[in-house]
Image (cartoon, rainbow, N blue to C red; front, side, top):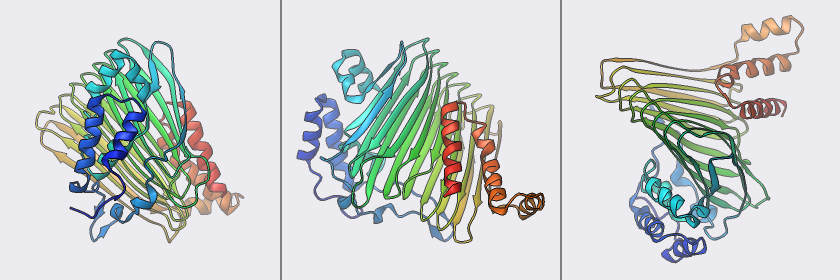
Amino acid sequence: MSTQLHKDISEETVRRIAEERGEPEWLLETRLEALDAIEDLDFPSVIETPGRKWTNLEDLDFETLVEPLEQTEEKDWVGVDDATVVPFHKAFDDADLSELVEEHFGQNVDPQENRLTALSTALFTTGTLVYVPRGVDAEDVKIRTTMNGRSLFNYTLVVTEGSSSVTILERQDTGEDVEGERYYSGVVEVDAGENSYVQYGSLQDFDQTTYNYTIKRGDADTYATVDWIEGNLGSRLTKTSVATELNGDSSETKIVGAFFGHEDQHFDLDSKVWHKAEHTTADLVTRGVIDDHSRSVYEGVQDVGRDAWDTSSYQRENTLMLSDESEADASPKLIINNHDTEASHSATVGQIDQEDLFYMVSRGVDPQSAKNMLVEGFFVPVLEEIEVEELRDDLEERIAERLRQ
């Protein structure tokens, strides 16, 4: 058991958060159980490479970062006809939606999975429910969260019934200036019903005083697809985990990631897929650039279970270093327990190809413009995987802005 996380977080605090939001008894009990478990839980596992532990979450000063009763944010939702997109707590005003939330809450991300998921369960004050009924195609669902206080705990639940689809674009940023450092925690659960399709794209662009912990997990039923798109540009430190369990036959997932770090930013990113059923397919693609004194570490895991016959699973990760002071590493892993599997993984860490740079300069392109063009070209294979045009355009624009800084 590690040291105490936050001496001022109490049962009274948790009860006040639940009471102010009119929560049902089952959710209050879930919060209190998570609160009781915090001190006995470990911090989230972080990526370790030979001789190095890259991220020390336990070193964060949570007593300074977390103000449980002072959480403030601006939140905007854009929904679509025939689907439900509502603030999380508004769902309890409707008996059917309340029952839906109770059924699915905590089924993919265990509230007591680790110290930080338990902390988030105990203290979350805001969130979103996205529910897509059978046969409904819901495009262009948008969620924007602007954190204004020192800390914010956010929860998102997505449930799709059979033969439905939804495309979600989430943006996260910081608003009002707050003296000192900040902390954001986000939990996202996706439950994709039979033959449904979910694409969840996010662009994280917090300011560089913010520490960010995010966990996203999807469950894909028979013939279902869960696709994740992860854009990480902001924060001082980001620890994020994105994963899909392929529990239904012929289910699929794609996890696409892009990050760009500069100054002293730190990214600890992991992508995981569990192949648990037959005829499942996964594709994990991540590309990132780091500059100045920034650091990145990536871990990708493809876990093929004993019953996962006829599995196809692919992974590739590439990091481009623009500075001799930047640091990067990658650790792709294959865990195969079924011989009827086609799988591969690859990872590279390197610098701009000097021959390419020389060629462009020799053709009259100034060195900085040539470097920027090569970086933009480096991201193209990831950007081409993004089906949400608005997210793709936003990423391209922010990458171009970062190169001009």
